[in-house]
Length: 121
Image 1: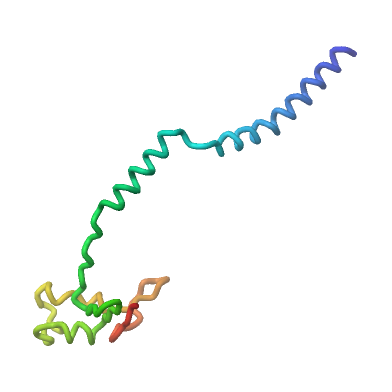
Image 2: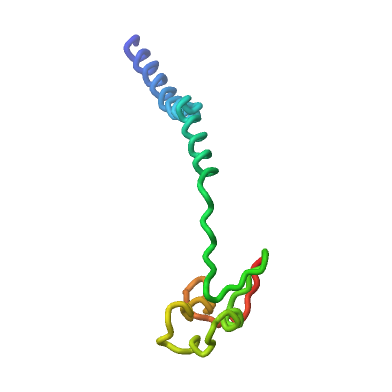
């Protein structure tokens, strides 16, 4: 009978270990970072502050006035030196692509319309 009792004790111990091991693993993974990690974060934030922000490149179909940005076919027509080049398929690249003024469906990506005038604040 003594042998059966030790086997059941071992089995109970294994069950406890089976349930406690994931708990200890989870607690260990939530530990504090090493001291070296803080300096890496400080260095990364310092680099972000030192980097100059890139100048916003204005698209051929955009006109920006202060905080307001107008875009679309009307804005591109106003901005173009020769508006007839906008309908020329062999126009130079400076007049932009017609894709800039197309509205696409979010799901399928099919063209659903043209953007005549759009305001962004």
